[in-house]
Image (cartoon, rainbow, N blue to C red):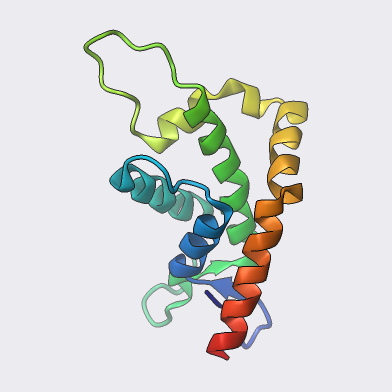
Amino acid sequence: MRCRRHRSFKSSCSSEFLSDFLDALEIMVAGDPSQNRWDRVWLWSLSSMTHVDELTTCDHMQLRLVEFLEALARSVVLVEAAKDPPALKPDADPIRDPAARFARHEESFQADGYAKLLESLLSGPGFKKAIEEATKRSKEKA
């Protein structure tokens, strides 16, 4: 789990780093593994910005720090939406599309409600643990 420094002094992180960090936070680890992977890929895809040069560099395969933080911020909505599944018809499949679950969770789009969700993630013991694990792994790889 490691962030590398670009020559332009911008931090960037691999998809492995994001996944390891979410594991350490115990976010999207329970339940269906294929659904968890899809949710994580969705977080990555939605949070990563388009890069000018995607042909001659690999920078588009890394999340910048702001993109990584955006993925974490989006993850709290997905986690909260999973706790409050919609009422489905008896023969309907559960909502598997992360974008649909994200958009459906209206409470998360109210500033106060979202601030509480984000605060619970950032101030919880899991976040401190994830930071410590990331720091430890980074030192081991250095």
